[in-house]
Length: 315
Image (tube, rainbow, N blue to C red; front, side):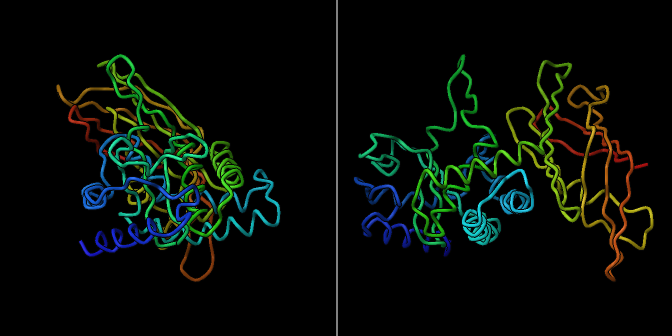
């Protein structure tokens, strides 16, 4: 509760400061909007809101990989600015209340830029401890009476780079869009997506992002029944090195593909997820070994939109 109160105070200060948002000072912010901010901190159970949270958590990894990769083709100034953004992104990734989802229709002109006659998806302040406000009205589009995501994960990453850039004091929107595109494009180059149509006519999808550093764990995002799940923590818990005196400090997944679905009950089915796994193993004294192995993870999918990894085989 204390953190929410602090955010409200920061928000009120920003509203009283000229050009506080790097766009233009928002108008018509009523007291009840500020009062309701606590109800919206970190809220949203939809797939896009979950993707925002996961992107915020992993943003430092995507930035670090861009800084290491030749694909990003960063200038000296871009590298300097991206390192500043990285420092803030590391702090943000530990803050579950950094993202605040608000309806644009109920927020006066918070998301509206008069000079450009434009409604924005996100706004933030120019101080590194401020929250990032997300316009929840623009996250989905209605198609055949279904809420379909209007923004993908790569676009979310680019957007968070942009907004985090403002938190470092950078104001140039076009420049921040460019930096965001570089980080997002580099991530997409290292991303593999596989889809599976389940027997009950629902789609299951996995997105795996690998990194240049062997000391980083691949991010694994699963999409099932309009929800988004990170499987990375599950894999980190279940993988191990052949030599039990060593422990994993990095992981890369390649040649990923689906096995054949099989049912275990009327409400649950198993879909194997297979591929090659490269594990970086550390002895705790400065030496590392690389293990290249084959893995098979059996995903249990339940009709109530929950899951578990029933079995993990690494050979």
